[in-house]
Length: 439
Ligand code: AMO
Image 1: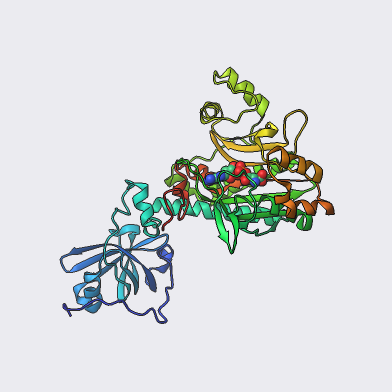
Image 2: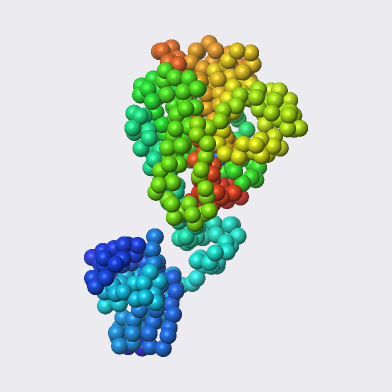
């Protein structure tokens, strides 16, 4: 028996009865089947203690030498191997969670060859790049599990919100013919024999779709060739896009506020443990304060960091603002020249536009859209863009393009706020940036 050689076994019809989290006082005395990864193996004389982990829980498995094959299998198993265990749950004061499983059968599902090159369950975080190189394993860490549970609840509550308000979920092409958000950060690609690009946003498509569906949203990847190395930019990010007919920017600002606030209420309800583990406090002022660009302009002057009117806020301006506005707030009525061609101009040099901010971080931007064909052509020309390149879009204006407005929210940036992390890659399963294309 001692010469037993471990081999991975076929799963066959072996199925778990419980996740480890579901093993509790109610399962004491019952026979259960669980699966998971061996987190630690400890021998104490003729007893062996294994800590098994699955997605959300852990459980001690205790076996004595007299248990025969089961004991020898467990004695040989290496941490990170994947096993299934059938056994009886008993109460044990000394064990983690005061419970343990006495195994009757052990199924080896995958043998681990080695340990990851970083500790997984310690409080100290190894360098991010090292973790990202083996992300599938790093994602098992308790804090990353907390981050991604919050992500799940945020996404679910977004979808619930849209459903309740009658928005249609749409999908738009990610291989496109022309830039919408400025030409500098496009990823070109060869589309058969033509040049094409990865979509920077679903902008013009979501606008067209309100002609058929009135209220639409899309949650999908957007691509930007961001050359600068920052803690808040990805080359591929998840964009939450909303577009609605017969409303203006003030209405969609409210929608943006309600969408985010509603998801925060849900997260506070459903992710108490996770927020505590991440030390995040989501108490905030509601409605979010709103400031026009002109008010921000005056405020920056009074704070001793003046802005030239018509210029974008630099990182130094944003840091100054963050000292006074550390939570959510809107900046609206931006100068037209700072916003894309599809944003509707307002009196003077302003536009019907807004950004949702959190401290110094821009989370979302949106506005009322140009819905007149002649104005759109004028604005394209002003930006040095060729109306011919947008012919496919301009032609729909001939069939009654309604007044409409919308916004795009950078989902990972929003998650940074909800989880309190300072690097956008921490909230991304497999982040892409200038230096990372794998895994
Ligand atoms: P904008 O270009 O401001 O607007 O993008 C909207 C939001 O997307 C997020 N974002 C990013 N997140 C991570 N990495 C990036 N490289 C990145 N670039 C942008 C930001 C930003 O606020 N079509 C318009 C939206 C609209 O008007 O509906 C647009 O794309 O959080």
